[in-house]
Amino acid sequence: MEIPEDWTLFDLQSIAPVIDCKHRTPSYVETGVPIISPGDIKWDGLDFERARRVSRTDANSLMDHCKIEKGDLIIGRNQKVGIAALVDEQTDFVIGQDTVLVKSSEASPEFLQSLFASDIIAKQIYRLLGGSTFGRVNLKDFRKLKIPLPPLTQRTHIAEILGTWDRAIAATETLVAQGEAQKKALMQQLLTGKRRLPGFNGAWREVRLGDVADLTSGNAFKSSDILEEGRFRLIRMNDLKAGVLKNDEPRFVADYAAEGLTRFILHPGDFVFGMTGSLSNYAWISPNLSNVLYLNQRVGKLNAKKNNSNRFLQHLYLSTPLQDNIVRMAAGAAQLNISLRDLRSFKISVPSFAEQQAIATIIDMAADETHLFKAKLQTLKTEKSALMQQLLTGKRRVKLTEVAA
Image (tube, rainbow, N blue to C red; front, side, top):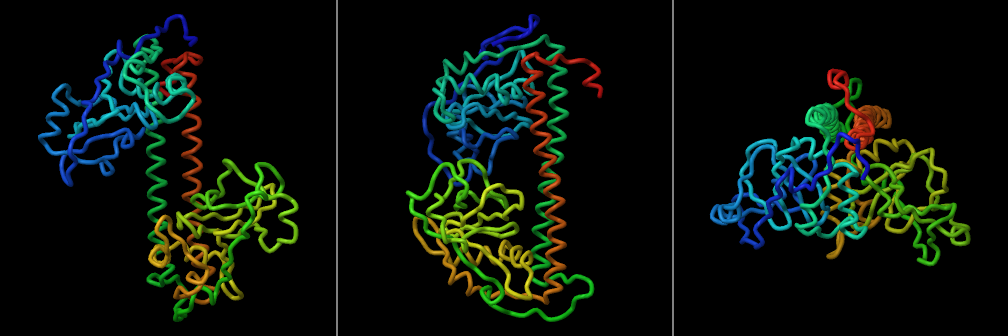
């Protein structure tokens, strides 16, 4: 590891004592003291809602060798190893198995957390895990992780700079959450007729979803017809994610298998949704995709019939009442399944075509605003990651003017 001449390389234990957990499994209770496991550790804090609970007696026994204080780091040695949560307030909890308490002494907690979030430590952990992202790092190796430290004044300035970015990211995350909540509330009001837009007052019609929308599903391609490369991309259940298509591990249909199946081709603006497993998965087809897209089995498609708005019905499909009905109607023990027949049978209420279009426009505007905040958030995270990599390796040296700015 190359570092500047005025920096020093330390073992983690020598600058930040690592305190191990008690190696025993306690009895869990319904209400009690949260016990933090590796899966409860996030970069932005500890997930106390997800954490299991132990009695006060067990809690005292598990923590009689150390005390958790503000400024400590809680880090997992198992599962996604190396995620470090900063204890930013005095909270009553205990650490469970494969979890360690790191008490920063020579480096500030914020600086040390930033190091764990950087490639500097991530690469060391990756090597210890043998090239895997999951597994366990033993305590001896964990304590020997190499920590590069600049002089104290530089550490302070680096922590201040990264803290500024963290505050900007947190503020943008709040805007995203608020936008999502406002859009959800707007959908609940407008899509049920509880709130009417100015100029509209006619009664809504009660129909079945199949009366106003064409609901279809994809083709059952053979496994031998599915390739890792090609020109006809296959859209599967696990390609759908929160409104967009994922691009990791795409699959393609062989040319001969796609021949004559033009009815399964997707077009820009099409709305597709999962019919097996995670039924809330969905995506809109973007107009700038380079491949011809074919729809796979157990993935549904919704298109409005004449005198109905596509966007209105797509938003209605994603609304809480309809999604709740889908889950109630779905069958299956190992995983949930919904049929086109059941989807077509759902009773819904729809306004006039003009009101459908107006409602869809308002919801789209709210969604667009949230997308802008999401894009800004991703940009901030990307820029912070690049800056952090430079600052924590000494490739970019800190100046006092940077902190003041």
